[in-house]
Length: 295
Ligand code: COA
Image 1 (cartoon, protein in one colour):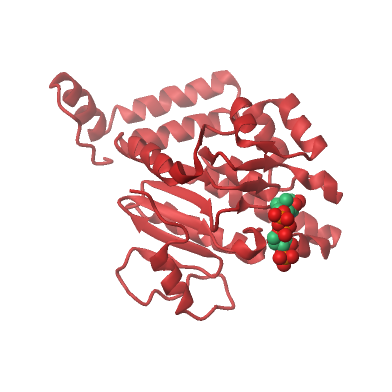
Image 2 (cartoon, protein in one colour):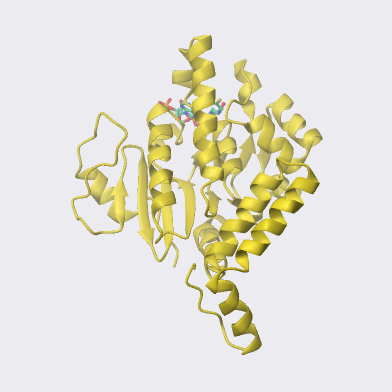
């Protein structure tokens, strides 16, 4: 099913809720409903998927402090919520995923504040990358600066044809500060990362696909359906195997290959202790679909 953005139910709840002065979720007026509203995010949970929408369309969803705090709170909640198997992250409106860190806030920063802000952003994006469940970025427009870095912290990226990716920080006299220099180089290679970072120029979705920055490019009207189709493929697989595969790749890439292989072998052994491994192999031999329980 294709989600509509902004989500009508979330919009209704937001419109009827006062803005809080803190980053905690707004009170859900319909307890038990699979939806929480934040000051700068829309969040909805449906069919095992957590839909997170950065919701500042008038500022092209730029990442101010409140958005970062809300993202942190929301992804911490998703991490603990066993009902959510996959998260989808997108931006409100048709123009932007996230057009970067909020330049108004950046402009007023002292050096110490700048360092603290970069470190804080890095920690939040690390937590998204290490969520223990896949996060798919549905990139529906500009993904610039911190927006590109946010997409990079996600497990997978699907872009609409109108999406644009770039690290334009050098045009502002700064450099990427939410681990873009590190994740981009690891994902697309040092040469291509440096071309993007040093030129500050944005690339099209097709070019992002060509260099391996995104997994798929789809027509804008098919973005959510494509992301949901990928989420459903992942959700059909054994949940613990998904979790351990993520750990093996994410942590393994920070190790020597030999250490990474040891981690892989250990996690492989751990999979062999699970009921899902017994079910998956038995189902194959019995020529029937598996019924995984995440145990
Ligand atoms: N921070 C704060 N506000 C931002 C923003 C950002 N990163 N990106 C866009 N906005 C705001 C604009 O200031 C404008 O607000 P206003 O209507 O109150 O003036 C609104 O979002 C719409 O943006 P606008 O520039 O008018 O749209 P556009 O279609 O002409 O251009 C972009 C779109 C993305 C090319 C342009 O907004 C841009 O270059 N943004 C900054 C990108 C960037 O450098 N990001 C990295 C920051 S480290």
